[in-house]
Structures are given as C-alpha cells and as structure tokens.
Image 1: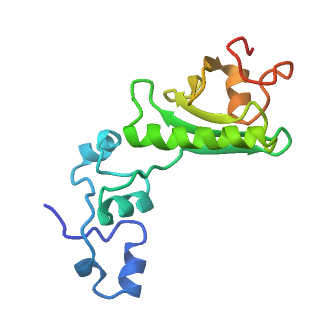
Image 2: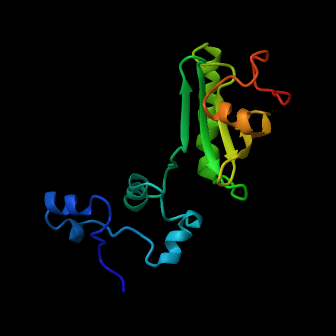
Image 3: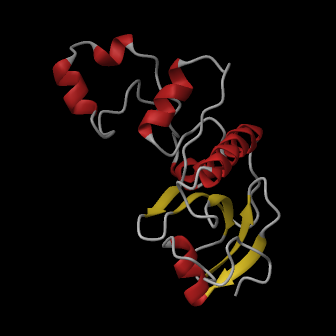
Amino acid sequence: MTQPFRHNLPGAKRLKRRYPGFEKTRKQPSWPEREWEVINFAERSDVSHSEFGQWIHDYFPNTFYCMDIDAIVYRRKTKVLRILEWKKSWQKLKASQRCILSLLARAVKHLIALNLVSCQSGVFLVLTDPPFEKAIVVQINGSWRKELAGGQWRKFVAGQILNPAKKVLTDDTS
C-alpha cells in the first residue's frame, strides 16, 4: 500500500505544523516503498543519502551536477587537507562525481602552490568495505595509488603526514 506522504520521515510533523497543506503542495519524493529497496537504495540513482540531496534531486531539473562529499579532513597542525569520497570496493564514480572531484583536486593544487595546505593534501577516492580495516586510496588527478592498512590507514584518514621525509605522496610512502 502506497501512502501519498510518509509522516514518519524526519521533520515531516514539524513541516506539517508550520505549513498547513504541506503534503498536498509539495512534489512527492521518490522514497523506497518496500523494505528491500531501503536495503539496496545505494544502487539506485534516484535516491540520495541525505534529505537535502533528495530535495535537490526531486525539485531541480537535471541540468547541473550535484554530489555530497563523504569526508573533508583538515588537520591544522600539519596543514593537511584531504577530501575523501568513499566507495565500496566494487563501485565506480559517476560522471558527475568524476567532474566535481577533478575540479576540487585542481583547487587543492592551487592551495598547495600558495602554501596554504601541505603537499600531502589532495582529493582521494577511498575504496573500502566495512569494517574499514584497509583501503585502496587513489588520488584524483594524481598518480598516487596505494593500499593502506592499520596505522598508516588511520594516519591518512586523521590528516597526519604519512612519511615526514617525503614532501609529497609517492608510491614508496611507508
């Protein structure tokens, strides 16, 4: 049985109270209708992981790229800025993600050139599966690709310098 509007969604009661007739005037979101769709919604292109992202998807024409970033790490002590986009080991980036992450990588390179962030900063694709004990990390617009595990993986995510002797990330970073 399909409901016209799910009142148990976060914030729905508040919106209904503030804006009488809310559920009649707004476009109905494309929420999963069955339990198995909720489990598999990561594979669906019409469902966002955030309510704001879903709102953008539902109300705006498909004439621009929009994505959410999984993590942005900035460690003031080391001046390391890492923008991390997480994917499961079998997933690939969408065209919109490739475009936006590439632009962000170019922006971070400018920040490095201005000496505002560390040379070990960058935009990275992180390929890992729960429980996140190891990951393959690929630098966007760069040549750095490495499998990290244990302490190195935790240092990377925490914005620490991986090898103080090396100014930039290289394949022999240990």
